[in-house]
Length: 297
Image (tube, rainbow, N blue to C red):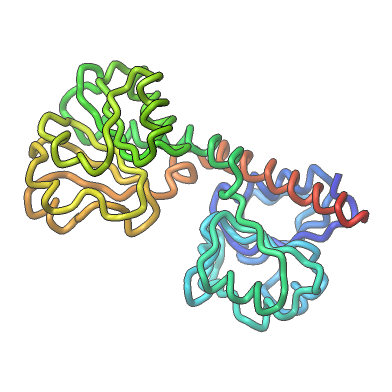
């Protein structure tokens, strides 16, 4: 239980509603800014404007999954006006407060470091990333189906990267009857891909692997699908880039060649916000509870 813990939420999308709901269920005292247009309010949540006074008494500050940008602007779907996290807001937090988000940019990291505040990026947790890979893969499959005139069954697909999202993506494609190649950068991933009966190759060999491909799903956050690679890819191939922006595809050259390539970050919040929010909410509550135990509160 989070009885006696004051949590302040700043903005967010439909995922954040589920996170707020979880914290209320755990008996936390919850305030929220940037929710003026929230129609179905959760009983017990206090809606307030963003101010230094709001944050001065917070034990926990929760930002959206994508945190804020390099100017402090916060994605706030239900806000009436723009929501921006200023330095004075962070400075107002108590010294023992913790800041939670999904992924933080340097703006937020630097401010937390400057004021010696604990910053927790929930998407760094293996349990969150693995569970989030499920709606990511489902959303990517929806995009593939919507943007092709052939079935996934019988197609040849490539998944680049065999991290948590790449593994789930490859397994989903295999389950639908696609012949799956997996581009990896580590020998242990090569061995695991072989064990899964995929066709692994090292990413340095990508140029030689794309000549017969129908679908490519990239999870590597660096430029891997270059202009040179794109010259070998069939024009009917659809590329879905699941890596964080700016992705790993030369989108300009893909458009020039007439190849459909789409950057698709944040799919869990788009295709399954309720499930994604529950995942984040459970992780947040667990993390706060563990911190309470450590501090002996």
